[in-house]
Amino acid sequence: MKEHRYFVYIVASRTGMLYIGITNNLGRRVLQHKAGEIEGFASRYHCDRLVYHERFGDVHKAIGREKQLKGWTRAKKIALIESKNPRWADLAEKLGAPMLFAGQAIRDHE
Image (cartoon, rainbow, N blue to C red; front, top):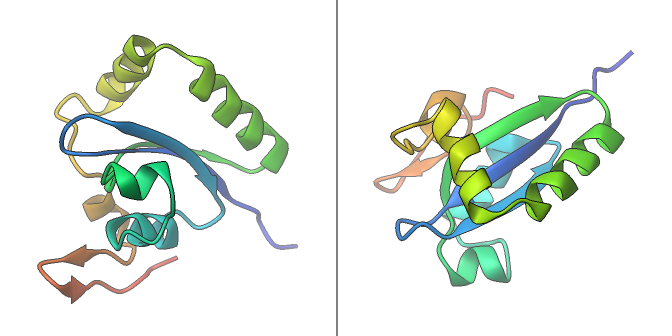
């Protein structure tokens, strides 16, 4: 039986704008953010740095968590990010997922 994976994630712009989303392929989704392919708020504000993510095996739990995070105040979201990523590093580099850095594609390991 195939294991299902879902991710709730936060991407940020260099100016601190935050976007919260859900996906079943975090590597692919981050690549889409980096390429500006996610229409709307995320691309308009250049939210392309993965600063936080959580993994779930159940889509309903992931959706519930996404809704919960979206309802939080900005201060609470920042505290969550900084509890796991105090320097706001781009966690995409640690994924081993496809990323575009200096025009180079890095292979997807998912």
